[in-house]
Length: 367
Image (cartoon, rainbow, N blue to C red; front, side):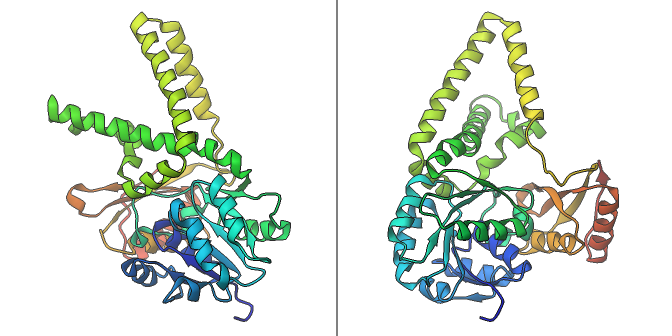
């Protein structure tokens, strides 16, 4: 194994493969396993792993860190299956969006000397699968770590250092506090987008088929996550049902208050609500690294595996941080446009030149 750190990634979907790409860029040897052979092969092809293991047990052999990038409902079971194959000193972590029960179960099955540190990167995409993975996914993102009284402080620090090295900002939170927090900030937005999208689609079918043709940037931004993997969200809703139901109740009450303001024509309260929301939105924490003007690059991309990863890697090699990233899909799945925001005009010019040299067209550079 030498001095090169070895990390095992169990589950090579979008998040697992992106973790692999990010870690390999930082010098880790990454061994991967996925129950889906197609995902595993795709992860190997896009460079997310150094080697594909024949089993999860083989993948974790001699690994200093084991990342369980599998659905929340199977994390504990996966940890239990791997327990006998983990080496003392290994850090066992996950990327699941539900923590309370998962972390407790992981700790209950971990053998002596194996350090459990729950993790949850607040990053992702409505796309899924390793073909859409990219190494810069976690740059500037928040990565929650959820230690317990049993957590080894040195293991927590070591994992924090790894997460920081791939560009994420670590926030430490108690596992019990985690689930209600993400119910508000992640799970409710998904279900709100789902509800709005289905409402619009049903209105289009019942009343006017032109409705969806009117969808502009606001509607598309508000419903983007509705395109996420339904199986993943079924799993999240099942595992965090209690916290999600509680926040849905509060949200429904606020929608009821909004309805009453409109029904009664109470413009003072409505104006106050709109103003408060605007100020709250403006005060959202930004990236600490952004000190200049954000400049946007728009790059047409073919609908082929690895294209996004190639573009972000090209920019990353320059030492240019990607501060924001989104994809505008063309109709009928015919490629699309990748939108990259970088910090400052000098960085934008460097990225522009490198992308053109790499054979990509840059349509515009706009602040």
